[in-house]
Image (cartoon, helix red, strand yellow):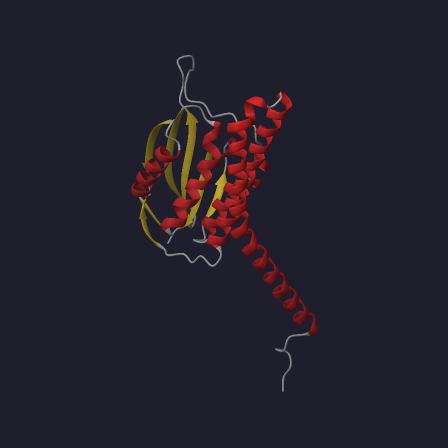
Length: 237
């Protein structure tokens, strides 16, 4: 009997280690994704009570410590959300359909106005290619993650320009964001960010966006400072 298709001892050991690693990761994720958010809610409530009832009695240093704890709390809550979203991605299967970019744009406009009610937006859509094939939910989720990361660096007004073009065997859905000009400006200008390209790539929102797009075999290309210009590359099917 031929034995070339039987696993070698090295392969068997590797598979065993992989299964063990997967089991450990699933166990850790199960505990963190369920218990961590509950603990964070309790901690957040305690911090709110401390701020409401004792903040005025604290010394200057004490107030600074409370504010630092609140900032750490926000960051930790963001990490918990990241774990929860990664859990949603586990085993996510694409449901490809033909998407009209005009419909995606309408959904995006509503999403931005809901998430950033204090900002004023001006939209311009130039869909040379009017539709793409992709998973609607994951596509919109990726857009939401990107903009959640980018828009806090902008002022109260923002111009959003969307274009689409063919790139070999893909369609590039391009989004450019710019702060609206003020009375002393000569024209629209890109928002200034404190973060370089490395920080952008390491942000939880951009990591999630890339993973959501990967479900539909799409990719994210960031060309502007701090994500102010980006393109989603979708297979041209």
